[in-house]
Length: 111
Length: 111
Image 1 (cartoon, rainbow over the protein chains, first blue to last red):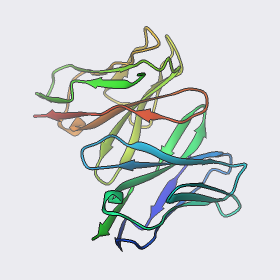
Image 2 (image 1 turned 180 degrees about the vertical axis):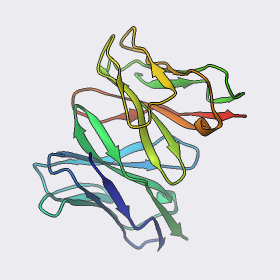
Image 3 (image 1 turned 135 degrees about the vertical axis):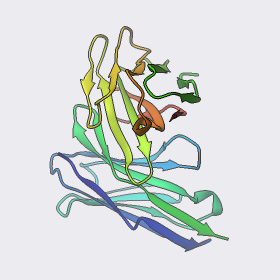
Image 4 (image 1 turned 90 degrees about the horizontal axis):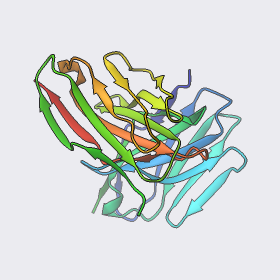
């Protein structure tokens, strides 16, 4: 089955710097890659996603890049702010509308 | 506004008891999912459904069951609660564009 791995498990950045989280996946048939943000005690919230027909997608300070050949995709957060501190989960589609999730990255933005 | 809700938000029960967690969505989504979230494991799929009367087992389905009698609801039942089932449970739903939206979660403690 699909195996999704995230690196690094914890990332600390100074406020205003950029943060990059990388995910790798194993199933070449995967064609949809979302990122979720989960604040402490809250539900995972979809923040950005990308489909296999594009290589990059941006939404204000966040962007996702996809390299299908290497089977990895990354979340980029620019000009980080304290409210960006959270756990970020990546996922890859399994087919039949299912998702396989990574184990999450803790991002800490240091004021 | 359309939404997805879960109840109860917190539940404490005893080993061996039957417990049912409710999930209700008003988006008219065909696809509904139950996940459990544990430290170090991310989000693991328990059961899912693609429509009324359809249910499928996920990667950690032992000890759990679901039923789908209408589009809006997918209750999750723990037949005989075990301490290993102490976790945070999230319900999610999606249409055929795959994006999954999560409910607020239920924190279950089995003593």
